[in-house]
Length: 392
Image (cartoon, rainbow, N blue to C red; front, side, top):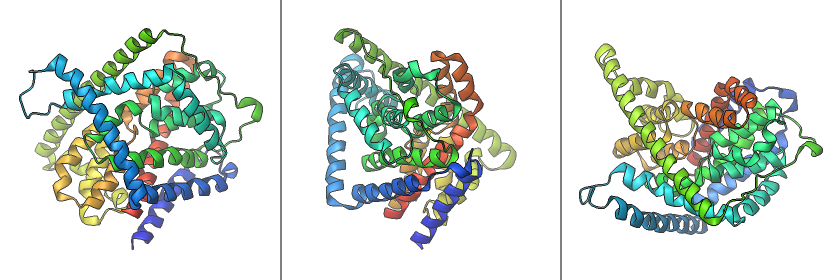
């Protein structure tokens, strides 16, 4: 039964992508099948082998150490502000982003990250049927984040046709930034965070290949990475401030979204006798079922999945913690994988604003395909959750 549901979910995702394809005749099926096979292999390796478990534990311990170091700085600045045994969300989950951002800045300054990103991107371009620029951008998005990644290719933005720009934006919305991984790992099991990162990377290429198929000419496939000319301490200051801005922005969005959802829920409850999130749960229940969640838990899971779409992944992760006692471990794992991406309505504005700040005309182009961008990125999340469900 598990395999039949997986095949049905896979068929639904591919059909939904196929229906909005820009040019169905240009879809390259061989790279899609190769990447789907790689997703299955990597997911099995990470979730069902002792080596995969050791790898995930190692990554988890690394982030635990990093969060511990971040905690030393937080305690120095904010020590005594919170009660003992309390765990304020902003201090314990969001502020460590500042330290992780600093580490990324150091790796970027010493040209470690550009080297890794360039060659991983080059290897991916051999199997994904897309160009080196698209492959580079996908890996870079998973390091820098959905808005910052465009800075590294800003000189090319004005020369990119609409179809290539769509693929770049889909990768940015489908992945998550390295600076925020530690925050996720304090809220959901690290093994699902790592698994989702791998799945989303390939999933973004798969969905882009169906919705937005095209050929890249060799002469057009040039990567021009923006060089960092700052001194070491200038870089440190910039990345510290960037990390703090991200923490504050996420905190502000959480404050606004949680309050707004509470208001909408209360209004719906008074008028209809049912909360807005519960309605969303019923709408998303079929999606939850198709990714392998038992029907008895599909409404609760669908509520969390829909909450992520209309608000963001942090709000949804907090809701998952509330519902977790009522859910099986398998359902928690599938939903967790679904949540690890930037695919939500607010990301349309974030990506549009980032591109517009670098190139006005291309920013307007992104705004015009914004909903289709979210549609594709959401299909990536559904595909990742379905594959995870097969091995949980």
